[in-house]
Amino acid sequence: MSATILFIVLVCFFGLVFGISHFTSKNVNNETFFTGNRRSPWYVVAFAMIGTTISGVTFISVPGEVGNSGWTYLQFLLGNFVGYWVVALVLIPLYYKLNLVSIYTYLDQRFGVRSYKTGSFFFLLSRTIGASFRMYLVAGVLQLAFFDALGIPFVVTVAIAIFMIWAYTHRAGIKTVIYTDTLQTTFLVVSVILTTILISRQLDMNFGDMVKAIDEHPFSKTFDWDWRSKTNFFKQFMAGLGIVIVMNGLDQDMMQKSLTCKSKRDAQKNLFWFSLAFILTNLLFLSLGVMLYIYAQMKGIPVPAKSDDFFPLLALSHFGTIAGVLFLLGIVSATYSSSDSALTALTTSFCIDFLNLDPKSPDSKAARKKVHIGFSVLIFLVIVLFRIINNESVVTAVFKVAGYTYGPLLGLFAFGILTKRQVKDRWVPILGILSPVITYIINSNSEAWLGGYKFGFELLLLNGMIMFTGLWLLTKKNETE
Image 1 (tube, helix red, strand yellow):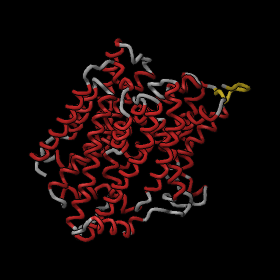
Image 2 (cartoon, rainbow, N blue to C red; image 1 turned 45 degrees about the vertical axis):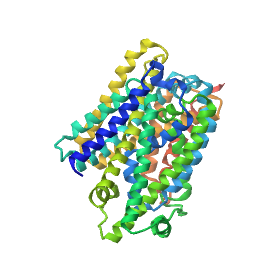
Image 3 (cartoon, rainbow, N blue to C red; image 1 turned 120 degrees about the vertical axis):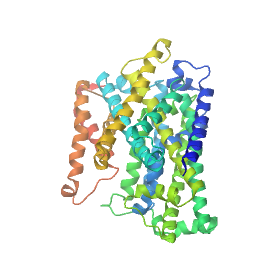
Image 4 (cartoon, rainbow, N blue to C red; image 1 turned 90 degrees about the vertical axis):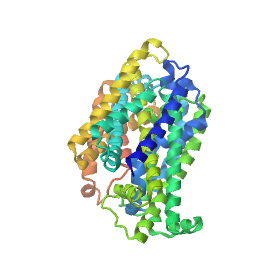
């Protein structure tokens, strides 16, 4: 793709984003940044959440991973579907009843300040590393595919990318994010659909032929019943259920959008419809993945060793200019729709949970702006650090470590909701550290200790169970809530 086309696409994309930012930033106050004044239409939030959930890494990885594990990812998605309904029916009523801005305030009311700070800290740590990791991987792809040809260094690319996010979110925060994510979700979905159509046309397939080819292909195998396999149905389903509850229902990033809805009922409708749209969108990605492998087989194109390189390789080198533009729009939209909400959520959590700012107070605006800038700089520094390390296995390991920190959140919220016991609050931070460590030790030795059993996504559930058990042991004697 030529530098001119790249420049035009990016200018048009950001022109629309900043146009939305300008429109949504009119007549705002400090509370708008945190809650959107709780006036967001539920159907807009539901659609916007698709882009937030599907990051740039997902955009690249899911189609390529089809060659390794087929459609077994759908088992995980079915667990996600049920998980979103659990969040809607259990957690949303709780958050609206307590009128929360930061969902971790619940832990303060339920257990005490140290439990509260522990939960919020783990979110800040996990989301900072997670957002940085995803942007790092996608920035690396864009740098190699586009920006190296323009002579733009990686550090400058990342700095500009993060500055753009800060620029269009610093005034209206979550209100702007909801509407820019709606635009970005549209680009993301359209790019996948049109790319799939382009592939089918190049292979002289009509819609019926394409559906039949996908259905009959070996990579469309969905269910795995081998109990020792990482892609076993029950492992995948339960992990999908648990991960949604934790990484969505207990995650400030995702819940902040739902809490901008006008009422509990609207927030629940948002999640009900989003869960369905989320499944359908991922089915598009899985279908695209099968078509990519069919195309490579029929055209005699070698499949790269790394599955994450497969979609970018075909889109940028074999499908033509239109497909290249669609790929660029899709990956940029996916990256920005997940990164802008992460930056806003990190700012919100730190302001509410650690600085104790009042969202309704105009006096807290200056502090909020400083925090927003601070997290922008922090994410930039983490990405640059990943680049300096320049060892993908090390960087991936760091990201996996961040994933371990969601387990204590699952244990804390589950214990608070399912029991009426009070805990020894001062010991909770120590337990929050021990739980992931114990989980890591078990995972590292599971094959030797458990007859060849390999943990997959369900490792999160184990982590949460260890935290829950530890909290039970820390229960104050003869004392309940």
